[in-house]
Length: 392
Image (cartoon, rainbow, N blue to C red):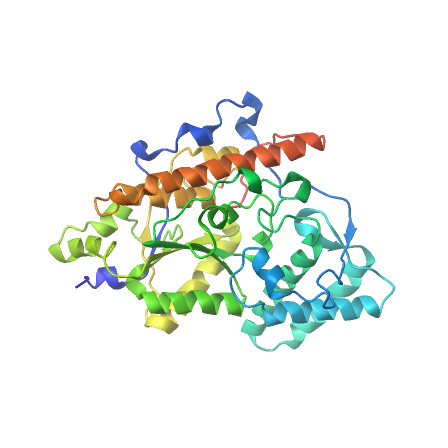
């Protein structure tokens, strides 16, 4: 029997001992010294481009093949296609064309002005706050999808001329673990997003994308959580309101009842489900709050205790500076989880350290691809380190 404490869905921030610092692979010590403070902007800005609403042969609607080609596993969100249909109708009824460009492939020009007025009116007409939220998410995703067609590689989310897919080596994740990338719509298809590396390396069934505010995605994720049971669900988030724990504290408690929790790591046929919140730090609070609200609906308890792991001066800060040294990107967080679990006797035989190495290798590939692109386009590969609010 598991203790009552272990029967709760848990959340953790990462805090590693000095013995768990990331390997030199991620430090990229062989690269020029100027890369020490490099940061690759997701907005490797491109020339404005018109959306081709006939790309799919169905009037611009997202097909299941296209949707899942971007890394999704859910059915095509109905509201996303509804937004695309509205965009198409607006374009047909105006002289302006749908043009995308800049950071995140945002709408530009006269069409943006007219569409902004229309979507604000639609938003205000929705009385239910949840419908407003879902409409906001669907609109973000619809625009990103349309603006990325024929421009970004579906697998690595980089411009096709910079595709890095051939350099990423797949690796099997231990079947006792499943990652869920709970991603904010504004980070969907973002070129320097690191969460995407997890399903590139492990596959979409082992590292599954769930888009915040997309009901089809969230339903799929929570159905999996219900099936697994709340003692098999963990969430990665720096909850400052809870007393922090380490992974070892959580799985090797002092009481005999707590110790039984360690055996649940490898027993049964249900994997541990780790939720990695993938969005900016400013957006993550709302995402975490939504997880707690859903946990209360499902299990009658919204308390999500944190497991805190301080990474220290992670080399990941070279890719994208973080608000503080104890925060890092999504891929590095997954590396940390695997590294900590590898130290537990019950998990040491599953090669989690090798799986962590595979993610590190992919992270180096991403950094190199983004660096090469910026150099080719004549842009600086260094940026003044500031308090970026990104965690993805």
